[in-house]
Each structure stands twice: as C-alpha cells, then as structure tokens.
Image 1 (tube, helix red, strand yellow):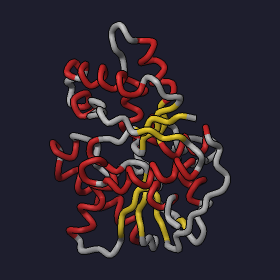
Image 2 (cartoon, rainbow, N blue to C red; image 1 turned 135 degrees about the vertical axis):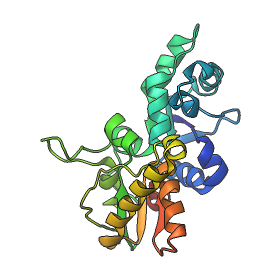
Image 3 (cartoon, rainbow, N blue to C red; image 1 turned 135 degrees about the horizontal axis):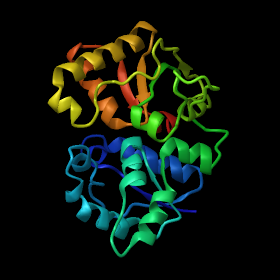
Image 4 (cartoon, rainbow, N blue to C red; image 1 turned 180 degrees about the vertical axis):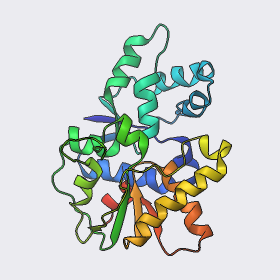
Length: 244
C-alpha cells in the first residue's frame, strides 16, 4: 500500500526523530511511504482559536499534497482528528472526503489497518502511557474509564509487543495533561498544575519513561520534567516501537 506521511509542524521543527521513527517503522512493516515535500500546517491552531475561516489555504494545500495516497498516517492524534472532522474544500470535496476517511493516527493504523501482532522492538524500561484527550475521546484509541464498557487501548496493545517493556499502572490513566493546544498559553497556571499532577501519577508509580501518541502533550510534560530536574524521560510511542 502507498502511504502518505503527514508530519505536523511541531514534530518537524522540534522533534524530528519522531518523524524519522514513524517512517522507519512503517517501512519495516512493508509500507511504501512517501513524504510530500510541500506539506505545511493542517490548520488546527487557527481552528482551535476560533479562526477556522483562516484555514482554507491549509485545507486546499493538504488536499493537493495527500489526495493520491491509499492511506495518510501521522504520529499525532490531535492533527489527525482535526483533519477527520474539519477538512473541506470547495470544488474538491470528493478528494477531501477520501482523505478524511483514509487518514489514521499511527497506532490505529498499525492495529486496525496493518493488524500488527508482532514487533521487533526492545525497550527494557518501566513506561507510563499518557492517553491524550484527542486520541482517546476523539479517535477512540482507548476506552474512557468513566464508561461501563470493556477496557481497551490500541497504544497499550502495541507496547505489550515490545520486549522487556513494563507498563506501569496509573491511578488516573486517562486524565488530561493540561496542554490543550492554545489553552496552555491562555491558562498557563492551570495548565502547568494539571501537567504536574499528571507527572506525579507516573513518577509515583515508578515510570522511567512517559510515552504517548501526541508530541504536543509530551512536549508539555517534558518541559515540566526538565524544570523539576527529573530523571524521567519522554518518548513518542513511535520511537519505542521502532527501538531495537
């Protein structure tokens, strides 16, 4: 299958290793991966701030770059959800619909499309997983604990395939980290307090690493960890699944 690799802005600028790990992992699993060179922002920051009318150029460019692929995959749940819910282009709605129906966050692509049941990955560490809100409540990558339903987690399903990795059990496993896109800018104090609480849950349960599907959330947590001079490290799930 031919996969278009969508790498969001903050990964491209601040965490390029996440993009490289995603590419490497998909190729190991037999995908023909292409990175469209002309891609830019998906428009989520503007839409989150109430300026969706300014995203038309982003939408048109996204369709131009990704309309010809069997699937589009990104290591970012929030950006994928934005495209799924908000990508529309006048005169190219068929192409936009194709993209909305064929774009996947990395872990859901591995579990739902490739149906991965084995990985050549090793990571002998205690790891806590942060279930980001967009992934959990928007893309349904994992079950919400307040629902009376069978628990599941696509990221956890993949991490259980990693040799030597021990997932730590959290007390509040689906609590928000406080990042919330522009929320962390406009409500800085609340955002940081939420982040500290999220980190405490991981640290108190013995995590050496915190992982997740959204670099935005992990970036927020990493900033707090650094200011605390903590030994706990942050890695995107793609980096762990690709680690040999």
